[in-house]
Length: 145
Image 1 (cartoon, one colour):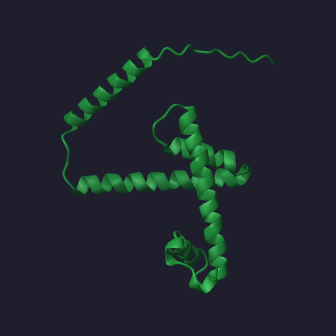
Image 2 (cartoon, one colour; image 1 turned 135 degrees about the vertical axis):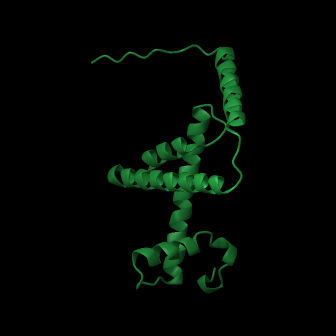
């Protein structure tokens, strides 16, 4: 495949990679071939994390992948200091996102909190019923020193 005539739809992360590069090194550019390599690395890492997080969700009998599964997948895939840094940056991104979501909600319509409390109570009751109806025996592990 000719790198100069690559399909533009194949570049999912190119714009984001370029923006990050300019934040870190404003005076540095990147060639198309180098961008293609970085794009490939990002896609590969994303696929690995998503696959591992999916396995963790299935293993833990969850219907959705949460930030907890993503964090655990990152710790399993990356080594030592790289994993710690990735988890730290991911946590920072989630906190920032949640702060923006709260700000957006405050600017919009304010909800009646009694409805929200009632929804949580109903969800808690459903979870309790699921646990009560679950016939899986608990297993106790003992570790000998």
